Length: 393
View 1 (cartoon, helix red, strand yellow):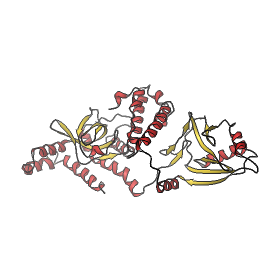
View 2 (view 1 turned 45 degrees about the vertical axis):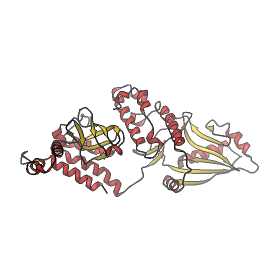
View 3 (view 1 turned 30 degrees about the vertical axis):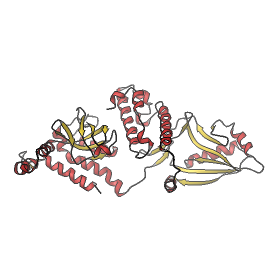
């Protein structure tokens, strides 16, 4: 509901910065000339600063909630500046991107009232629009003058609007896949025991299978040492679980007189069925399968109240899990890094830039989990491990 007023504010600020009659007339100049006496000295200085400020796309860092933040202009080669700001610093997260005007006020900097937070989609739309309007090449570094940014002012609000409006008009869940690119769909296959078969018979056979790692007396992880080859749609969210450095394909559990195989795609259900029918030949019958879509699973999860876990325990478990995950990730190929590991990519200048962007992306995504222990996770060690701590500004 606040968006119409925010967009109106963007248009109004664009108007205040425009000149008419071949640069001889400006709304702010005329107002201060005719009605400036009605404003205080601070407001007059702010209006004059707003009149000359151009919008730009900034990256946010070093946030002090309720006080200040550091913003770096992504469209020009200039030093980051610290701006005084109360309300926005309470909701923004490190590495967020915002379109706004930075106004010098005495010895300090402040931001204008019309602030738009930019997603990656909105950022791409804006950059494409700027390159097209200014006739810049796709690989040419953007280093725009204040006049160029001021002349392109409407593009900022338009890029944001075209990226966000479809989400409001037709909200959709992101495409969910496993790490092979198979559509996420939860299959539980129940293999009944054949007549006279006991759990110890099945356990003995499963213990000899090379792709099964014991998770307890009656549970196993089905793993593969082969690296996953992602073949899913671009932009999908891929679910990837590992154990002992190997990709987990599913889980097995003995319950009563049946063996249950749980996997997250139809393709893995077919493969798992063949594997177990062969490995347990004569011990189990053909399975009965239950299927649940990702959407239904999430809906049911929201309806079921979870057990209360003390916040300190939840934070410790989450942070330990993230530590293990990201320790492994540093030595795994990452699609965003041209399928190089972060340690490999950081050795070259081009790869170093990609690693910095990747670190900012995962840190920002983690920070945008309100109320979750993930939001409190400190990524500083990863920057230090990769020799990039000086770039974390």
